[in-house]
Amino acid sequence: MTTRITHPAGPDHQVVEVHGTSGAYRRKVCSDCPWRRDAVGIFPTEAFRHSAHTAHDMATHKFGCHQSGTHKPATCAGFLLQGADHNLSVRLARMRGEMLDVERPDTALFDGYAEMAVANGVDPDDPALAPIPPARR
Image (cartoon, rainbow, N blue to C red; front, side, top):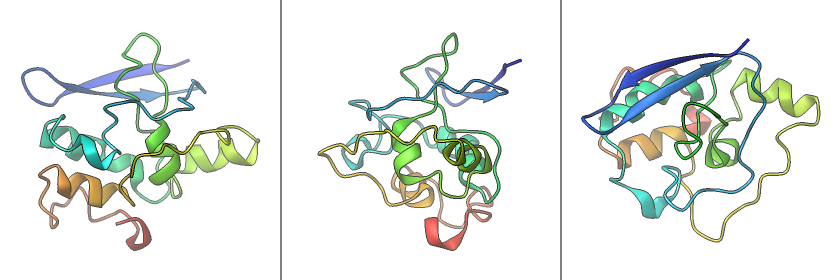
């Protein structure tokens, strides 16, 4: 069973958390993916606070692709390439041979979640970022 929880993140944005068995994921980074260095400022700062827990050590919630929407949610390709190393759900999927065929884009991506969040207005000392392992900050 898959459940969805939404969090408002500004007047025109929301963060959707997907919990459960959905194994859908993007294989290509979207044109306005928040992991792209050239996409800073597209999404509100609050969205990055809400999603920070996906990069925490042993996280079980995955960072969702904003273009997939709420009806057919999928894990973000940028997250799989740059922010999922400490995510338990992703690590288990990779051990099963899943989520391994994501294409690296020609454009530069942020090195980790905290770097992306800070570039988009989150204070570097924000408590939401503190549990992110230092190697991915």
